[in-house]
Amino acid sequence: MALLLRLISKPKWVRPSWMDESDVPADVLTDLRAEKNELSVWRVTPDHSNVSSILTALASQRQRLDKLDFTIFDDSVLDGIGIRCKPSEGDTPHITANVTLHADLIELTVRKVALLAEVLMPFERERKSRKEVQHLLIDALTSGALDRNRMDAKLLSELEEPH
Amino acid sequence: MNDAATFPIETSPEPREVNPVRRSIANAALFLKLGAAMSEGVERCFLNDTVATHYMTGAFAESSTEFREVSPDVRATLAAIVSTARREIIEDGMRNAITERLPGVVAKHLDVAIPALVSLIESDRIPPIVVAEILKELGRLRDVVPRPNLRWILERALRLPSAFIRDGAGLGLAQLADPATLPYLRQAVENEPNPDIRSGLQLVVDEIAETMANDGTAAATDQQA
Image (cartoon, rainbow over all chains, first blue to last red):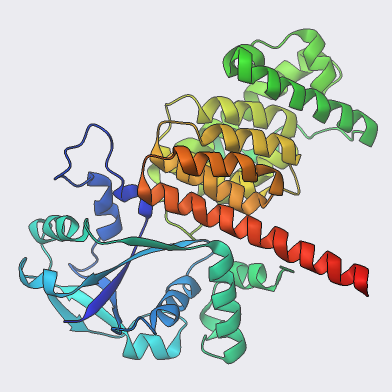
């Protein structure tokens, strides 16, 4: 068993009052927007000790400082819906995380993405506040884990503001 | 057609220089008006302004006629921003029409933009994800918009039916980081029916409380020194 992390937006996963308890809001499909029929995920260690590095990588490729919503799920749910997960290189300013922690869910179809939304629904959704994200990024910049040249100038300037 | 070309912010009438006393009076009047809107309704209080009120809050205009000329422009600009945002993919941490254009409009036309935004937020005509983005952005404008006004708007949005909007209001309040919002936020946590939104609001409460505690510790340390 392995754990995977996917960036999401928590409120999209809230069922409206009219929706059946067994159903999933259609809005969540925007959190599972595939590119080349693939979805980016990150491999989490069983003790979750690398979650901060993953979140730092995800936050560092943004244009502005903002909260991060994510879900961590057991990759065994993928077996039942025929989705394969393949290690691949990430494209963030986090040099190490790109190489060691990134993976893609591959060969996706519309049906598989809909099934993925269903199997992800019961997993807990978590949030790192903007302030926590700010600390993660500042620490990573200080330690040299992030390639500053690959980060958005506006994000960098927000990090350099007094806090 | 490009929205920016249709509603160019840059060509909107420039605000006049306003002396600080007049601006303070205008801000106080705006806040009283926001208070009145709680009982009388936003539409009634803001969209049917009397000439006298225009004089009181008209920091940008000396006559009600001029106010009327500015107001539709600002509302049209806001509508254009919202219209562009509706067509965008709004993602956390990424730029969009709200993040790029709203701060400028609010800063330039504060007295008109805020009531117009309240009206838009509560109109139920805008997708909740766009409203949430507006609320988040408003929280970032704490150095531009008087805090009581922001507090009023954001706290009010915590009671709206959409979970997305309540979450956005919480995020706006987190940006505002105003200890005065704590009692209201704690109440919102108690009343929040959805566990995902509730945990988000609780995070905001915890952060503001922690900041207060740290500030208190810092102040005590300063006093001892």
